[in-house]
Image 1: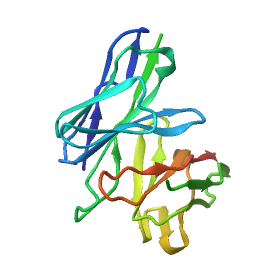
Image 2 (image 1 turned 30 degrees about the vertical axis):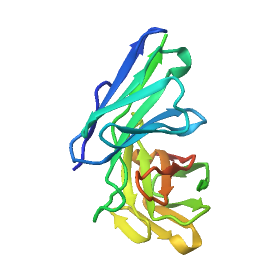
Image 3 (image 1 turned 120 degrees about the vertical axis):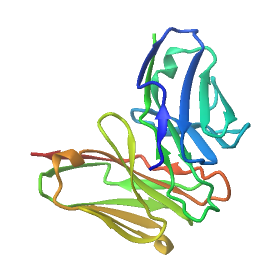
Image 4 (image 1 turned 180 degrees about the vertical axis):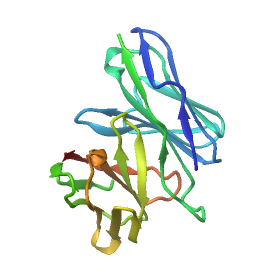
Length: 116
Length: 110
């Protein structure tokens, strides 16, 4: 089974801190994604990456950046954490559509970030 | 972009009852998944089903791509089935970014 591992389940950070959320997948998927989920707002895409060193903005990239130096790792960076970034952060990976088999997204277990 | 509508938004059942959850989408898709979000927040893949019918135990799903909908059936529901069910769809050309519905919140009472 594909595994997507997020480094922290719960995280508490102070306003203004630089925060790193790490995500690692072990099945050689080309595509990786970061979502945030808030009550009443559903899942919103922050950034995604379709290859090493490649990234594209999602629907709500403001206040975030990402890094993908290796295929298996996709990091989400909050440059200066703010209280409105308190949320559940979900990482996912996926094969490219042209693959012979494509089972869609596999999600990590999520990181509940609280910014105080 | 593709619009996704899930219904009903909320569903309350007694244990043992059957249910059908629906996902309508506004455009052609070649990628559709159903997920269950557990109480800890993790999204668990139930089915990857861009077309056709699949079954896994008490759960089954059918996608009729030409009519732009998918159905998730839960039979003999259990309290552990409670949670939010999401549908995610895409017509992928490259990176595989999907659009998620708002989910159906299922509560199964003992």
